[in-house]
Length: 438
Image (cartoon, rainbow, N blue to C red; front, side, top):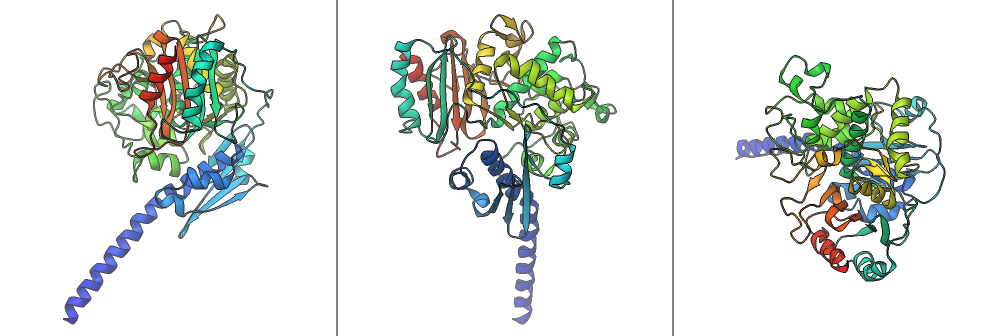
């Protein structure tokens, strides 16, 4: 009997030790997620910390973090059991999760970014009669939450004019909100502009040193943007996956992603990968002599023509903007970006994207089953059955959306906190009702 008890105790201790070791591997994700997202919400979006903790951070182990907001140093430190993470805000840069460096060193590495003019993104008003028809839908969506979810912002453009606009209490047209994976579509635009300027060839194999001695040397920008690189990747957000480790543990997110081995022949297998976007952003950054030139290029060649001012494309510890996930901009900024693609890459008669770039963007990746183009999602597979097939979209985690519907001359922006499966917005029903109002 004593021997049996000793064996049982030994097994119990081993199980407990194994559980603690596994939990320890989750700590950078648990504490890092809370620190990074709370810091950005407070210092970039201007939200109340208690509201963020109650809504955005109230799930899984994340809810058990003890969070400290330091308004003087503009940092947030999150603690869970024996672990902690700190995220720091820098003027013009936004928030970076500290990994391998202290706040002072991170601040010292930054170069001053010229503050742009303040103001609300200017969009001209659309048809007043249509606005009157859409107003009840906007109120039902944002105020009454008729379509489920927790909306923060709702903007509808028709023929380039604002026909609906509504915000959650405490937010406005000036509030910068998180893109999550909608940022990937901005990387599409950046690649397009650099292609137009002769800086990159999206169909040529990339000259990434780490790839030159194996099959990865065949990977192109096109393969990465169409999510068909063939690189091994795990995009599961619910565990210790590649995407969670990349966002919450790694100093250089693009380097982590490009270090993955080849699993399939490039261009033959589709798999959604946030790592692919960070490889692209890191590669594009490498085409410039300095970070000042790179960030200046993004501002001058992409943001400025669209009227986007003081947006935060937050970088990782290496200095590369996190193209997969971390762009903070206003709902109007996101609407203007959608209008760029509705207008075939032009703004006010000026061509921003190359001729034919939008057609390329919405051409289905060969192995995607008609659901994905190049860093944009497609409705050819009828994910929204009551919406025209020509719709394409920028999709982000927890319900961030820019819908572009050429046949209806519509751009619809939805921002908020609407996680699956219980609180996901009825996007199909909302778009159906907006289209019916036309």
